[in-house]
Amino acid sequence: MAEAADWLRVRGIGRERFVGYVSDYLSGIGFTVEKVESAEPASTQITGSLVRMNPSVPAGLKVVRFRVAPTSGGAAIYWEAPATLPDSELARADRFSRELETHLGRAVSTESHGTAKVVRSPVARLPWLPEANAR
Image (cartoon, rainbow, N blue to C red):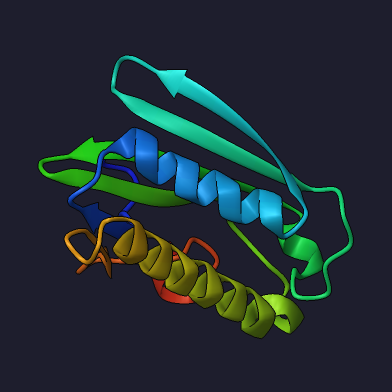
């Protein structure tokens, strides 16, 4: 897991519940979601494929893949795919990632009555950004 920096972290809820929030959001905006559990190391891979037209999802994000791993006190999500996007789609992809982050933050905070929260990792990166690929 050292090959990629995590994108978001959640404190106060476990990996399984966090996977549920990510899956629910993707399903709600038109993706079919497949989850694959791994025991060593403990993680869940989430793959979403866009099946219902959604103008807010750029063509390069029609298939997305995340990995959610447990941390002490919560979970971390790694954005694994797509790794590259055309320059013309970067702004829309950034907006999509911010909308996903905002939705997850609201959903987790609401369900936990403010005791759990989603935060951007101190070393957060998205794989299609140039600074992420320079490391």
